[in-house]
Length: 75
Image (cartoon, rainbow, N blue to C red; front, top):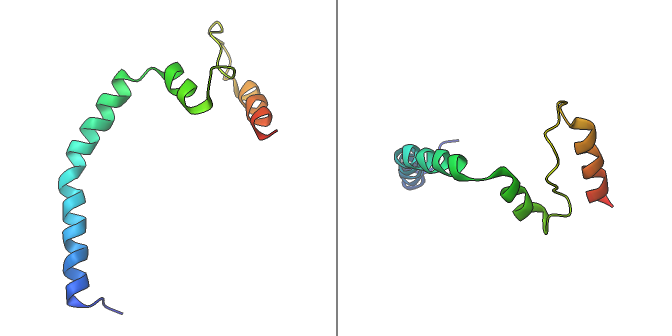
């Protein structure tokens, strides 16, 4: 079923607005990705740093350790 012409025009305007904003939003996303420190972002997400330590670089994927942290978060 086709939306009414008024709704169709509003939807087209909505889509066009996001299409025009896309490049600017992508530029903002890229800039934020360049300047954001991963460790700081993780601390902001998970709290006071008890889950994040300044451990030496691991030479494995860390998947087992990651799952252990997620298990602690569930508790």
